[in-house]
Image 1 (cartoon, one colour):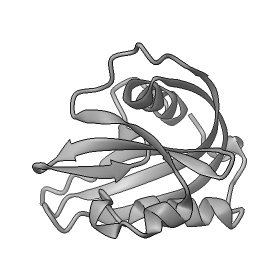
Image 2 (cartoon, helix red, strand yellow):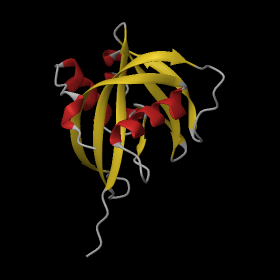
Image 3 (cartoon, rainbow, N blue to C red):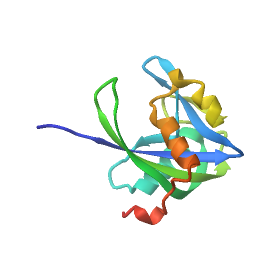
Image 4 (cartoon, helix red, strand yellow):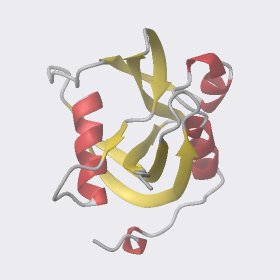
Length: 146
């Protein structure tokens, strides 16, 4: 039996009621996602979340909590992803930083603006994570054991 779930991280960054999102090219269309990506070898989950946020948005962040751990099987390819979603605070932005390949840009959006555009979501996890964050479902970072 060969089954290989993918471990990913995502970061919810909120400022003044808006959430930091990335616009990325996926399958020939522009989709919206939180700053997110795969855990790399010899990296902790916290390090991965901070790195992915910087690489995809140019924002340095500090993590403030764990929103949740999600299991998702993508209907497009059948791959199962385990997503660890963190809450974070934006510290500093480098507008000159080159963003990851495939990232077109960043945009700050309200929850309602995102909810109105489900056809642009990379997956339904983006709104689910935001709703869990807004409901106060954040856990102490100590729940992550590196």
